[in-house]
Length: 289
Image: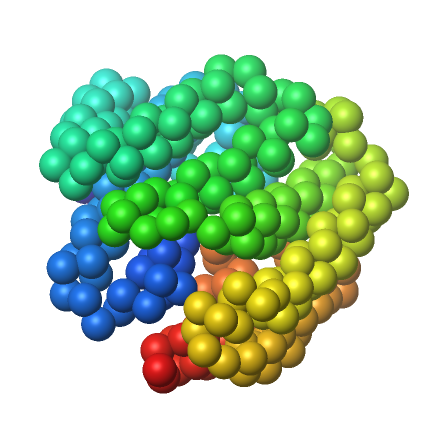
């Protein structure tokens, strides 16, 4: 049972917290109803994400066995059978879709798009350089949009832009780590790595780094943002964004980390504290009026 739970990758559920962006930036945190809907959306995507992780691990079990770290995954190592993983994935997918159905058409449509994106990714697009990272980034955008749709608030273009750019930054950082750490075995582990080079990834990371910072800064300074929140103080959260990105770049280039962004965020104390401080400042600023 422990190995099966590990295959669900519960630590990766932190990625689904992006659904709470809607309730936070819509200033609905004090609404128990909307907060409960957001929690429900979070649960839906946790179930669907775990189902997809199981599906991917089943398909990739052969290549995972050639990976220095992924060879220890329960399905690749044989600790969890394919039959058990398949039935668990089907159950979780059903729970996720049925849960989304109960929470509204908006969440259901987002959930179906999320599943479709991941299926296309698993069945072929993950082998196409650049497009592979864009599909992963799109998954984050879908979850952010779902968070707004489940509470029936307008979807901010800034939410889409900032989420996309940050996800691209993390995705290209992960690809760089894989390319460097796996060396000659990189393409055996991930076919898309054949289309990348370290200089190319460094350029892509540089572009998304600058774009993310500028987009977030423009968002905080936008007249509609200041009018919505009744304050211009959101700009003071920008240093946290800059530090978080710079710290992550340091970990990629200086500490050879970045293969698992979730693990980095949860285990690197400077980044974890920085994220919590950013979140705390955002909540105080947007909810103060």
